[in-house]
Amino acid sequence: MNQDSSLILSIILVTSIVATGCAPRPAPAPRPKGSLFIIGGGERDAPLMKCYIELAKTHDTGRIVIFTMASSVPDEVGPELLAEFKRNGAKDVAYYNLTHEQAIQPGSDKILDGAGGVWFSGGDQTLLTAALLNTPVHQRMLELYGEGAVIGGTSAGAAVQSQFMITGNERKTGGAEGDWDVILADDVEHAQGFGFVQDAVIDQHFVARRRHNRLIAVVLQNPKLVGVGIDESTAMLLRPDGKYEALGEGQVIVYDARQARVFQSPDGRLGGHGLTMHALLAGDVYDLAAARVEPRGK
Image (cartoon, rainbow, N blue to C red; front, side, top):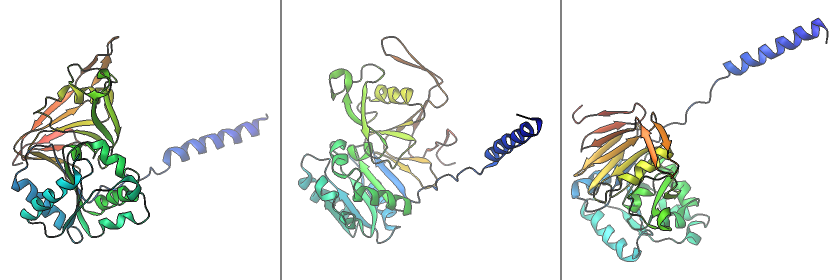
């Protein structure tokens, strides 16, 4: 290669590097305009339900669509939930107990027309995903959340909302419901959830059922995910600004390992240095992006 050719090649390489470095980065995806209203299970009082219903009224017709498939008795739970919602001020509310075959049909998403709110009942979260995951109904729910609707649920209806969904089963017990007496790698069974929450993992019945060990295990193995454990009779409101607000009687526990150093012993036990924990009471707000708590009244 002669001197002129070498010079030309150098110019091309430098130009390519500069162009690559100066190329505009893709704009971040816009925040959803809607809210998530996630209850950790147990009893829920009228103020919590009225808050959810008022949020639903702000989008489209305010119609509320309930999915009961998580329950072992979905057609008994449905009328009970209809009565609860109407008692607390909902005007237009309907429930559906769909099979996967029904949900994958073209046009199945029409049941969500006019919806300002979607609600998932308690039970077994894997039954909800088995029916709705990757169907037109699921896609329309994601669109509704982006457009301004409120997506809510309790217990199983809480766990299903994050992309990383805890099933409740423990691998060391052979896939049965876990007792979580250790913080162990590869022990928490999980599956794909509906993905309204991408950067956190939701757990429920959290303080009442002492589920700290399993959520700590999840965030130590997946430190990019913030763990949000919601107690019974308590809600976590994920607002359009991306901040998490605690509502109700109990606490929302947050585990954040994003800045932690994570270790694993030869027998699979997990360790972490710098893991942070917050116990939020009603009115406290957690700013996940800034990793800080805004106390009540601030």
